[in-house]
Image 1 (tube, one colour):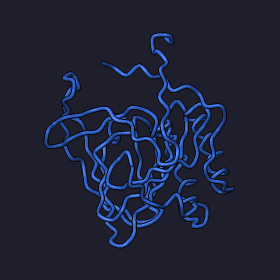
Image 2 (tube, one colour):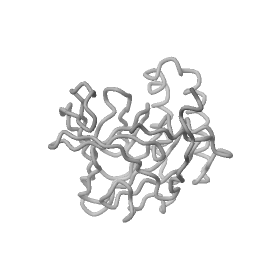
Image 3 (cartoon, helix red, strand yellow):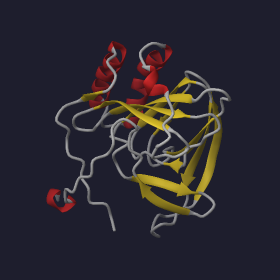
Image 4 (cartoon, helix red, strand yellow):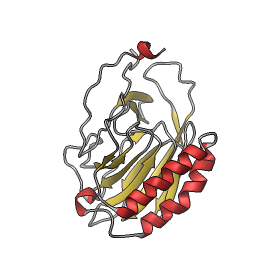
Length: 224
């Protein structure tokens, strides 16, 4: 049965990190997102230099947002910490903290986005879906590439291609910390988790370590 949940607007923008650097970046991201809404490739290209500048700064992310989370919705102790979320849910910024040796499930994001490595090292495996999507619960993937990600590196997310991946922390003694800037409320929406060997796909909601999802029951039909 299809998901019929509509995420309602929040009462206001939500800031979980009080940082002038982050606030300036969010202002830039909003302006760029609005002015390039017709072309998300252009959004990513215009936003990337500002994101790179944020990643070079080392004192804006509090240590509590760079910690693993044993109760993670992604498993493996992976922390997904919300840093900012727009009132209309059209923009979110969060940190993803992966303990040494842990790996995310294969998943998508359903939005344009940029991911930058803030601390540590990672290995990213990118996939592409090659089935037609007509059979419920079935998905066939192929590997597009495997990439070694170093501190300060940035990669792009843009559906339908380039939006499915898994990420592993390759650091030995400390977790990897990546910053995500996304064009949706990634932790709150239903998206997809894939099992490569079984050729299966299921819906999942990752949530945020510091902002649990609250169930909403708004009927999609009311909006159409």
